[in-house]
Length: 230
Image (cartoon, rainbow, N blue to C red):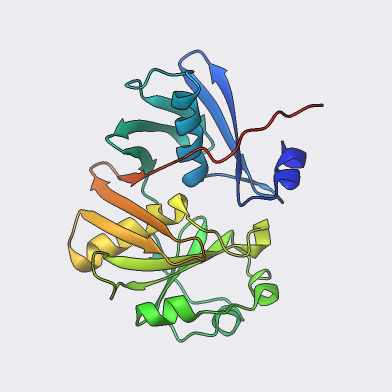
């Protein structure tokens, strides 16, 4: 699986295997296996419905390193049921701010990533990170976020994870398992619309649920198919 992911050279490649009551799901970057990934889960669920492995009204159930996850159709969107992974305030490690070229308002960390808030959406969009410097930070990745100034969105973010082979991820569902509870506490909303300001751009619809869960809504489309031969 790692060799295939390296060959695919995408942020993450998902692998699914049918089991009795659902599907085993694993995610690999070009460099390593990771514990939680949103958009590859969205894609996996989309393919299961599109290719007829599941009925259109049948939810997808996945067994993963982060527990049991599920996906269900909701109109034109797919909604993922993911665990919330909130951060706690911490001092920044040496070199983090200089690698990003920013002055933060807040720095926190959860079990996956650092979370850094800056003062404006413009600062988030204008970051030109030192990828070599960021790759030395001893965590999966770094989330940079701010309150949105673009109408229609609650907050914006970008996500950098060169230590696992992803210089910048286009859309990061797992990062929003941290961002959703963070911004819910700050702006007192349980339903949030997020904008990930990567070159490709990602829009996520988030809902904070009870018992520490986050519903992440997004769309998926099949862009190509291939046959893997050994």
